Length: 145
Image (cartoon, rainbow, N blue to C red; front, side, top):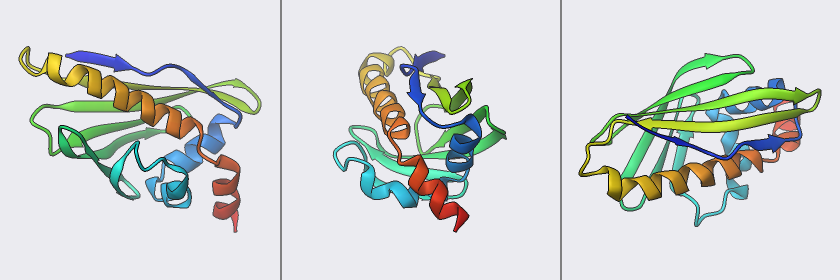
């Protein structure tokens, strides 16, 4: 099992606010225009899943399999020739500050590992950066309306 870990991102919102936004993937609709189009292609989502096209792999779907309030959101992949699990970890570091880290564990065979390791790490880092830069205040405001 290969493991890929993003850099720890510091987000200036509480873990409860971040979890409220990220635990329902429909909320990404409110920030879709903020996601760089060169970072992801064909992004679609519903409450419990999201799909993107990743070069050179193709379409990848991640389905939420577990939510631990204010701490963790776990996903598993679909439409891949190998198993991939991903999770978002949140740790409050102050009243209005949260550390976020993304982790992927992938069951890569020795032949695939050299080909997909770099794109997988790069993609994970882009996702972490994108999640850290979401306009949480705008999304939270929309949720309350």
